[in-house]
Image (tube, rainbow, N blue to C red):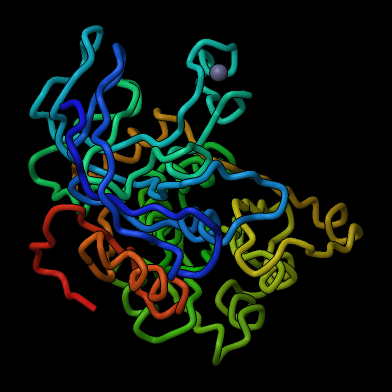
Length: 360
Ligand SMILES: [Zn+2]
């Protein structure tokens, strides 16, 4: 495949959606332990936005190719690859780590000092907004024929993150009550369905009736529109003044105080993000008096992604897709992502966009 050209999206400088360029670039070759995947679908993720805008304290190597959640078909394998073959349909596990250190070998690849999130911390280039991508053999896993590539690309990093948050970190128990912010976001949709696997009672929060209806379809028992209702008072009413056992946080400063207020005595809060800002305040008296647990969470391991996929295969975890767009419309997709109107994932297709889903 030497000198062969493919199409992809990258940027040379940080900025708004207009910095995204759809260009011809060199096709990758598989290294000894690598595979080349013909990327059929790539799911948009907050990482794509943060990398494009630039983040204080993080240096991105330019030019940068975004794209963390992807699925496709293996078209080439390195000579030492043994677990997958050409023609396999695969999804990408996007956490690149050394796989040798004690953290990696104990299943805690998210603590590896050499961990990089593919399409976010990788570069120059390397990411999912392309027609072909090379990845370590360990970073792909086969998917069943019953799942489309667009669906698979909706259920990699977000599913793994939600699993890591609720199952590994918060240790969700059957019958607990869980408050989930951003119910129709990538991690919100998967969190609702994971909580329901535990027969938890899910209270889902979002900002429109359309989003709340989608959350109910995914299994949410109760819904709250934060634009028209007081979240704390509604949670208090729904839980007979007790509060919830687990808060699923990722929005940060705008929701933090309400999250703490909604916690029952002995409850856990698990958070992986701060899309509305990171300088939250905490009354320490509430923390110790109510014996709360605040759990930080970042990334996932391959085991967690594949545990989630057991339930994708049985139909218990489904994706929620907002739009499928051709990759060359990436700038339009980024604008929609940032508009906060989307209900579910935005998927980009590097080859063709043939699907039953709506287009913008
Ligand atoms: Zn390691």
